[in-house]
Length: 173
Length: 308
Image 1 (spheres, each protein chain N blue to C red):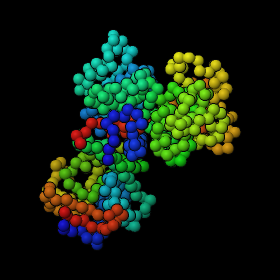
Image 2 (cartoon, each protein chain N blue to C red):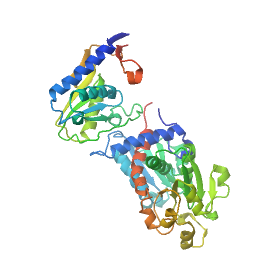
Image 3 (tube, each protein chain N blue to C red):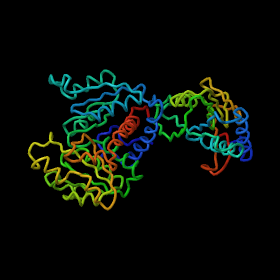
Image 4 (cartoon, chains in turn orange, yellow):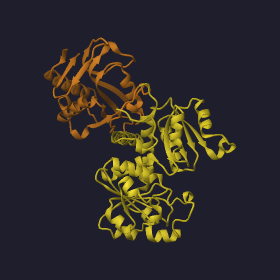
């Protein structure tokens, strides 16, 4: 087991991602943040928390998206859905999708399909904490990455959050 | 996590976890139905046949809409316009349909046990959409979903089921489900429409006085008098039934608390429910119909055939 991000590094990385998102969407007035259920929500909660400390919290529109019904492996096994909560229109908005790990790219493919059922965003960008860059199965790349790592398919990246797993860290197993 | 059964033949075969899984999945589908595009691609490669050997408006349309909103391919079969009229047996009809690569069967039949018979003889997953006087499981699930949505829970609630208990599959499925989820149940109606040993058999209260039943309950699920299933007169007239067991606004206003009124449809206005009750503030009848689509989407999604 190897530590990729310690608690302190994770906190700094989240801060940096928040600032990078803000850098590219200065006013935030036409930008919406959407976290992916279930594990992307821990990261999006933290990023939104950081953003609220920097800009007027009233400007931030934050939603949660579950992609279970859009998966491409529904025939393989049964997946249980989580809640989707997008209480605003995404029509003509700039959407920042947030997930914890970008691996094969299949989750993001499903997320893009799901997102389009809510309207036509003017732009969609992708923010992830960990980018496993050599394991992609679809042509999808992140716009904001906390840390880019090279891994074997046999390895597993585990992102732990205090809210759920009692510690803040990212490890490679 | 998945359902403990391969088919949905009745609530009797489900356990508490199954019911909770269906209700929580239905919540997610209810959100899907509020989106600009009310459709998901989950069952894109699944073909479902709706076999209706008995008339239906709500249930058939609700199932068909649920199937289409899951992107399944849909075949509709109505006995009255089919070769059943030429004497083909149920099993032959279904086997012929399945040979055209159909994956799931939704069936309504006037014979109790018809879907159970099919389940023993064909490989496809079967959803019971009402069999005779036995069960109507998706109706009970959507009733439970609607109660939970309105009152926040099922556990500890007092639910009165009022009317033609004897001939109602909705009543039986509701009793099984609500008991499993920890609600208390009372059945009310004229003695001729309540099976004699139901109290002992299903552990429910029995009450012949409508006012007392309404005073006791938090929710009243009012049933239609099923004249088509009664082969002898069981009460003197519809007008007399209305006088003794019809729910009137004044009755509800005289109660010490507000109760929720439900009805599985179709309503016989002026018989079991007066119009000002059916359309009034106590009624969640149209919410039940709306929730039916989400609940049926959940059932079909959870039962669709998977490799493991």
